[in-house]
Amino acid sequence: MNREIRSRLVLGVVLAAALDAAEPDSRITVLVYNYAAIPADVLAQTEAESTRIYQFGGIVIQWLDCPLTPAEANRFPSCQVQPGPTRLALRILSQSMAERLRQVQDSFGFVLYPDDGSFATVANVFAHDAEQLANRRGMRLGVILGELATHELGHLLLGSGSHSSSGIMHVPWHLKELEMISQGLMVFMPQETERMRTNIRLRAVREKATEPAPAPRTQQR
Ligand SMILES: [Zn+2]
Image (cartoon, rainbow, N blue to C red; front, side):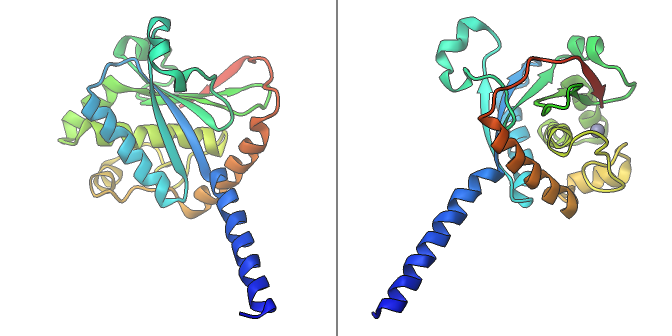
């Protein structure tokens, strides 16, 4: 092995290390708050469905199932962090919470965009509405919830005005979309995954910066 080959190998290792270092930029953590008390197997399917769709776009999600009461907090040390630019919160809301918080008729969830332009971090899905849709269409609740979670988390990662003419950010979901969901074909459009990956990199840079105080928020379903 001559010096040049050796140096190239070293360079290769360095480049590989740099790529490895870049990889976490496409990773996010999602803290899950199961207010609707959906069963564990349904929650697992919800997360698996969303994981599959994001992985297709090169984005890795670490899910943390978090407690709802301070009394349980000590048993979940990983959850003892505030949501942040790359630590998103997914709230699976009960029927009564949905009725209280819903601002757009027939919506299945919403996100909150801070009015000060800081990164949005909290996504909400309506479990009861998802269950009714799943029952009507003979689909699995975990699949529907997974799609809804993916859609709402997509709003966080894409920014406001992120509904699309096709793919998972298209609304409303008609027969065509539901069939695509059933077949596991509903995904983000390529330009959306590219935008999300860019935004995740920006969020990761911001992660270490001091978060601004909570600002008044506007709602988008
Ligand atoms: Zn939407």
